[in-house]
Length: 607
Image (cartoon, rainbow, N blue to C red; front, side, top):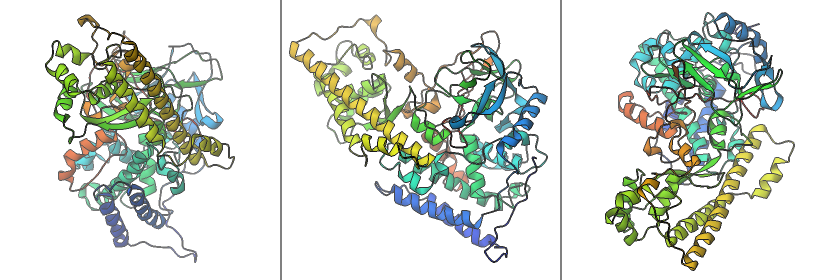
């Protein structure tokens, strides 16, 4: 058990080896890189571009068949080695075992009663795979000379994982062998399964993820073959698209931020064993203990012996779970749908509206979200819509009128409307916009529900339909909420109700409910709204008695990653985007860790 199979060459039907010449492969790789680096397609042409890219990738995969490194046996065969290695390395393993939980996949099962907030799991730094350990590995020489690797910690981790997987003497093999051999991220979907997502708000991110991964692979394939610093990498003789897709998904579903060894910043890490935990609603209960130099997890709730131990991955939408973690979470209290809004630059009042928004810290054009709960809009979106619907006189009042500064501060507070007419306009806009978005779907809610009853539906198609249905349900709720609010404020106007007056002590900038506060102080990687605002979650200690540095995941943030990558493109002479955010914000203090995880089999959660 645990023996690694040798790299194999694909066999033809006649039994003779099919040898692909380096020149032929490099030509295909160059064609793929050129296709993925071209300008973004015009509206409505995204699917056509995706199928073209996928066609090239399929050609490459066919020629690379049988060349990937694989391990004998099943994943489950390696769990005893994982636990033994963890125990020998100083991790805690006496409170749980690894078990199969059916549709939820593998997870941790309590082997004794565990109390809520009890520390039951810790993983020392030496077990973690980090960007720092990558720099000190065989990958170090290439890392030191390639600006893309230096800028994208997630890609560095993916290559670190591949290099260690190919090394029979790697100390991380017990962990690597325990990882899934395949994932349920859209990178592993069949083309017809991706097609189910056409028309959804999430499909663009899915198509971009595939394009970015293909571009990354083509760029790094050429780099591995041609760069002198890559000459000693174990990937030089065999680096397939399937290898890279696996490594990217492993990292994308599991990476988290931890403090660097000297504590001066943060680095990305894979955390063995802890990343077996599945997701449920709750609070983040994992942090990093600098004093003992280890990741620590306390119980989210009371667990009795033989119950599954869960952690909370963070306030992610189901689109984020599907795209970056590979599962749909049915009872997601934080689900939302992205909606892009902006003030047209051709509008006569554009300058005034942009100025009011700027004073409120909101861009004139950005991505917001409609939420599954009431209210469906956050403080930021409420403020934006109020300004978006302002008359010229109202704009002048918020720019030049008495108490203009204080009025700006009330834009996101639902208790202080601009005017009854303004409230009617903004809720009418929301009602109409949500209804229009619903019309873009090719199926109805009822049709989706009927499809989900089919027993022969593939796992990926089922997840795609669940996501599509969830989006519609959020939009339906948003439209209904807009209508109810519109009628409410029409009644206020009809009755001649006085506008609420405010005192300076009442003012709360863009923060009028607990929900809004959570949205304002959200994690960078979870930003769905106002991504240009660069808002980060405030830090707080998990354990006040010890120096605990919180770890945050890099689960979703492609726009952030693209910005990072843009800075190094001219140096790398290549176009490269990320599959997943790898921005490393060096905030000191404590914040919680939320898991960036997935599943491997037909599972609802990840392990």
